Length: 173
Image (cartoon, rainbow, N blue to C red; front, top):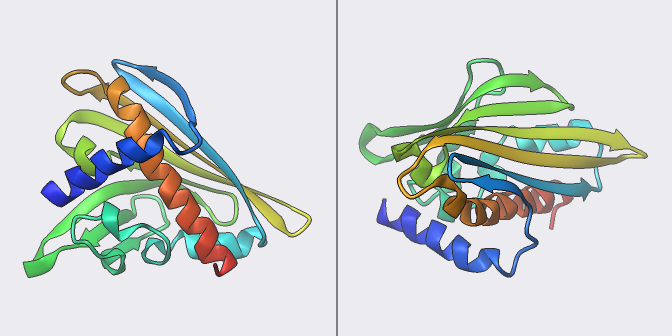
């Protein structure tokens, strides 16, 4: 838990150096957005997207290893993580899976799991000329003592790291 909170704090510091993508931030919620063009067709992007162990940063896992992550890309599916000694974490639930087009996950990531907040993490894929534009939005709302607006920047930084990881994994960099 301390490792995860430290990673989120580090993301807060890094967020100022990252491209700011906070669309809106209010005490009761926020929206962040990232867009990236990948040099691959949508089917190839989807194939990597649904395997977070290939692109999610291990610094933003509870176990410290992205290899413990799995994603069932079907309605009701689990974006889950195996923990030592038989433990597990349900990060988010799949609510919409349209292969090669859209993936929507519902839930709260990281430290937001212990609050009254939840969100929708959407990956929209649009292919053109053999390249795929991936637009990632995370809309979060609910209650968090002190206000969710204060978390928009750190969460934006963390999601930005994941989007960069997806791009690197898809493009083999």
